Amino acid sequence: GAGVSQSPSNKVTEKGKDVELRCDPISGHTALYWYRQRLGQGLEFLIYFQGNSAPDKSGLPSDRFSAERTGESVSTLTIQRTQQEDSAVYLCASSPGGANIQYFGAGTRLSVL
Amino acid sequence: GENVEQHPSTLSVQEGDSAVIKCTYSDSASNYFPWYKQELGKRPQLIIDIRSNVGEKKDQRIAVTLNKTAKHFSLHITETQPEDSAVYFCAARGGTASKLTFGTGTRLQVTL
Image (cartoon, rainbow over all chains, first blue to last red; front, top):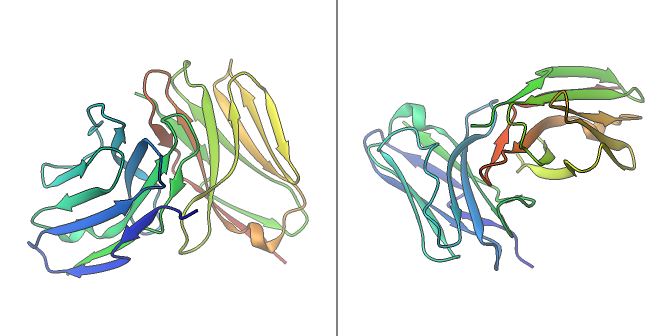
């Protein structure tokens, strides 16, 4: 079946603009994660959704970052008033449950000029 | 929360040699430890995982060992090949939460 799909694959924006990144998880996966990966760096946890539970937002770096997920489907990560330090690859992953294998999307490469 | 440390940050081995990457974790209740491989420009992909009720798991040239007492786990790659060159991430699932905490990654370079 289809894997985790992210769009757009690349996004170039100007400093101060808002951006919205989309993640389509694997069908039936209850858990969804967002990570940020700066060039040559590790995976920085941002937010975690598990079913209808309140999301774990402990990794969001500032109030400019927010994410939503409707049920067990699509999630959007929104970055308001983008800054140059927001430039990174944003990866989404889904899993059948919180403790299971995470399947990653190909990521969205965000460049803030 | 969980804290995962990974060493070394870079590792260069000759083709055919073995490579070992080590991780430590802080939450003694952690019970799931996956390893992901990320090739240049690609997404991370799971290569092997281990749960806390076993001490070792093998899959062809790859093995993972877990020492719960010492709170560390290691990835072993034998007979390395150039296609093993990638960044490897360890992770641990904390006992009180379901999210994974990742290590900082090890860049493995297999030279001919």
